[in-house]
Image 1 (cartoon, rainbow, N blue to C red):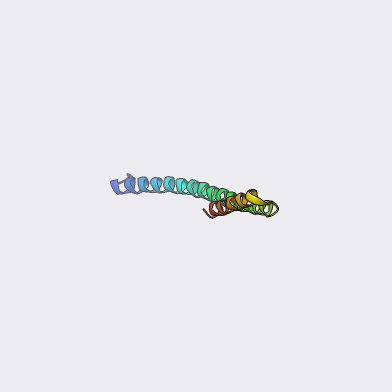
Image 2: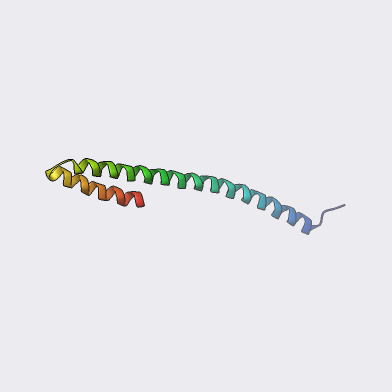
Length: 80
């Protein structure tokens, strides 16, 4: 039985859909990896900010004030 033009078109569309599905699956995998990496980076920056804050509380004068200012910036970056 010969294939009609409509059958050929359906096969082309089906093949295209399978290729798009493969690409979307790969994109999802990479997007999930980026989200995980960003969450981990955010957590590290938060912990760094806490550490600097505690260190700044133990220091007097300008050093303690400067460390507290650094803490503010690390908190801003951990939110981003």
